Length: 253
Ligand code: PGA
Image (cartoon, rainbow, N blue to C red; front, side, top):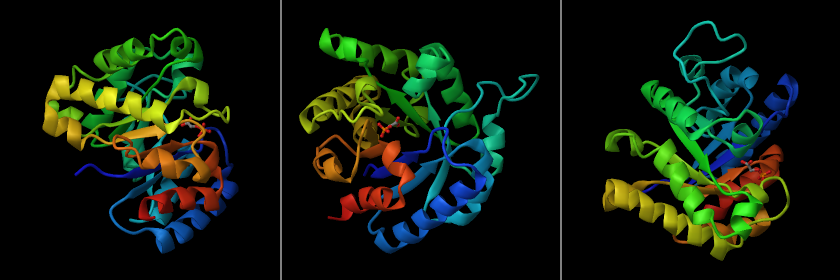
């Protein structure tokens, strides 16, 4: 059965002391609330990964928000997947829309990053999603399909089976606009269908597909109850320990 996952994305927030303090609160609160087999993850800035991995234990897993596509070398300022792995992180967000938009990350580059992440035994959380224009002009299914095809579908079945997909409509990220549960479910079902066409039903049924975009404790219950929504990738609400914990709790209610 596919995993239920609530993954926080702190983005470029929290200095060292703030990060330790917020994460300690999250671990203590999630430990009391977590039941069943849902997974809680915090994807933090690189400076935090080492300390948070030690504090999180089995209660809250740790992820990075990016890594470089090459193994090592003369890439000043970059961080490799191997380095991320070496400090105890288990996940890496690949292809967040902010990286696609501000750092011109293409599907081809994101496929390279996914490959290096998998090679280092990390789990990619691969983000896809349409812009507001693409939503309004009705091309969003084509966009989603091409992001999946070019970013992921040349992976072997074995590799693809390790990937978590996150549907994040760009127009809903950080805007307070959430996709309705019907809009999100429609796209999640489409994503699962595309996976099924490429890798077969068993892989499609086992792939966790997360929703992201202004997800909070108020709207999560309805979103997470949709058949093809297996959790969330949470930005703003992951910066508040109570909100993040309530999102984890949503699966227990
Ligand atoms: P948001 O961000 O929850 O603040 O909209 C989600 C994300 O960017 O992953």
